Length: 471
Ligand code: FAD
Image 1: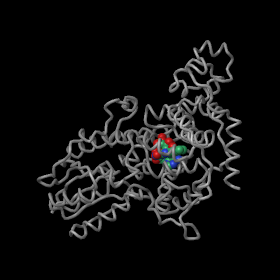
Image 2: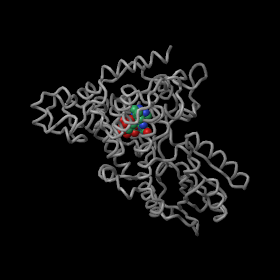
Image 3: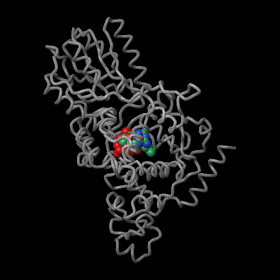
Image 4: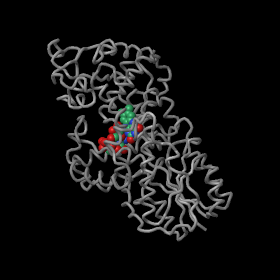
């Protein structure tokens, strides 16, 4: 009987344990991807991630086809899809790699028992993380809530196994089940087509991901620690969407870093460690995307301010670094980590808007939108997460800009209306002398907004709100 390989966020051929095990089982294969918005509910994929998914599936389908296997696409609740596909193919086994989103874990358990009842074997593999969630515990036997000891425990554990090679050829089931047409899923925006900026900056799919990883490992890891916080430079790997969709595995990345003890290598692996930490937290706290881990924050007096939220989303706050960040997100579907920190902090602390509003916007606009990383990081910035930044540490967006975008290249790229402004004022145009503004063609309040809140006032208001919560 055929074996079904159920692809999810592991859209690759190399180092794919479920695919390799199914291929080695000797059964003829059926490759399946299910677009299951019903099971995902509120956390179904956002618009930018759907754009990515389209291209990633197209790329996977092509590499499978080159090895003799066609990819079947189906849409709907996985439970029904499996009833149908098992009936159509007479499959005797299903292979998949585990996911750690709470909704996906619930669904997978249900499917496992459903398949067992029907006499179909299931084989699940652990691959999307380096260390299995729940296994690493602190001295009290609890899941870690502080990153540094967590990462120390990871580094002391047996290292992740070397990645598996890509199978060269597959034995396909003679009659693959019928597939939906990928275009008919309408994952790509049509009217309006907002994906032009994304097409310019991304190459999607496994071979592009591998090439990026190899290039980064060869030329940039050594400088990672020194460069990673600077905006508008090639200091970071930009692998996040590839990792989210599983076009490369974390094991691939781990083993590509050939000098893990060097300054750059260790700093880079530590960031992969944050990815692990966020996922382990999500498994331990399934409500992390919706509820603060620190329950005191249930009482935080956030404001409702539709206009301010709208200005933030559009990148029209009058703070050039925040605006560049939000426009980078809108145009490219990605934002540099330093910019994410400043933009998120601005929403939560300067505008006093609930972190969950920001989390939602990122969910819809990031190509790397990832339930664990997104929610853990938003909570971290909001001060309510595990090992979180203390609430009273409030970024000054102008100073952050001067530090991490000293010549203003990042702002000039994404906020073109400030492109000609003198570097001394590029992060604080409201303080620029009239003649410099005039020379740069900037008219505050007309071509570029004045700050929607004053930094000192906003800071005092945020601290007062925090004190109120603590009372
Ligand atoms: P690099 O610096 O090259 O790091 C390599 C990899 O390590 C990344 O690809 C990522 O998988 C992981 N990583 C790095 N930093 C973090 C971190 N702080 N937390 C978890 N993993 C990390 N990352 C996402 O993948 N998806 C999200 O939805 C997401 N939302 C975020 C929201 C906020 C408010 C903040 C502050 C951060 C968020 N991050 C998210 C984490 C981080 O900003 C991105 O992973 C990183 O910027 C991706 O760029 P890169 O691949 O060049 O990272």
